[in-house]
Length: 136
Image (tube, rainbow, N blue to C red; front, side, top):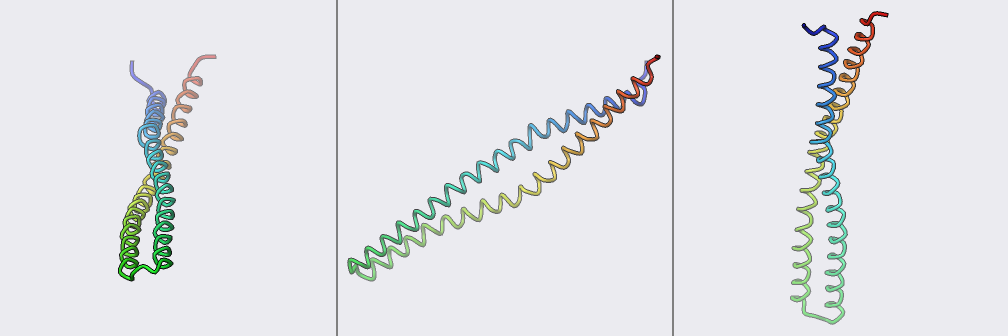
């Protein structure tokens, strides 16, 4: 008892459907979640960066209003620049990650759609041939 060609097409179509579903579940969805988490972290980081700059700027203005020594003001400005510099590095890291993963995600989505479409067509073709082969 051998398989007919359309039965093999149907079986291969079902394998493609399962493969596309597995790729979606085990790679694309976790990748999307990771990107969303990083975007949320980036948003929080941006808010903290704005607040930190405002705090340091207020401190410098208060030091100037209190006629603090130029040395104290320069020290406060250096501390502000040092702290804001840490955020710039983190901003660059997050944007590099997003740029890197965007093309991977887009390509995988196209592959999953192609596999799903081909698998559906092959499974449908196999079913249609099976129904056609049945005696009336």
